[in-house]
Amino acid sequence: MLSSLLPCSCALCGERADEVVCTPCTARYATRGSRVPGALRVLRQPARHGRRRGQCGACLADPPAFDATLAACDYEAPLDGLVLALKFGARLPLAPWFGQRLSGAVLARPGWPLPDVLCPVPPGPGRLVERGYNQALEIARPLARGLGIALAPRLLTRVVETAAQSGVAPRERARNIRGAFAVTPGMAHLVSGRHIGVVDDVMTSGHTLNEVAATLKAAGAARVSNLVFARTPPH
Image 1 (cartoon, rainbow, N blue to C red):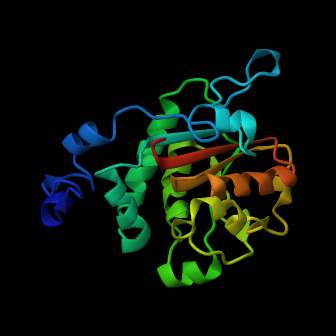
Image 2 (image 1 turned 90 degrees about the vertical axis):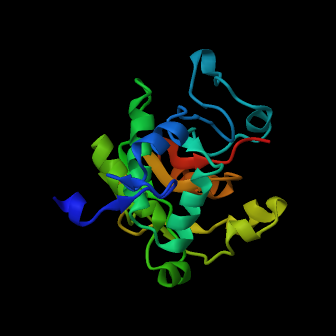
């Protein structure tokens, strides 16, 4: 009765749907299988004899602070438009759909080590006031429910209001984000010796997630895994 009174249109094709994205569009665009890049492209996971499996040359030359990354899909059309609609257009009903896709991608990989706690990437105070919400947190909520994992929305604080990474030249992105995060006072006990899952909407260069992981590792995290809805395909 509720769906009849308040019909929903698919955010991609515009047809009537039971969810924010209809079943045919979900099958067509969001069930291609998760990519599991490690540092930037492939899964990083400890293997025998201390070696890591599937590392790319960039990982070997400059190992990242995080241990693994799981992405539900590639950041490409038409899903990139949904990411932008959530991030800049306040299309908050998309967030649960993102979280469900990401939860499904995790559960589709038996044996993938589940984090002890989930932590969304925090925005700067100014950007949070301007936008009114943190899209990473909105994705993390349904993800935490789907995986049965505790969510710590205030585990990290952005202590430096940095310029948006999308507007910074690629070679300057690491410097732009350096020192931007800190573990919130009183939250260190949630980090020490634990596996932290860092949640974000999209991973592009990986510099923001790397800085987050470095901050968590410095606070004693045993492992840091990135859980992102979309990942920019390697070029």
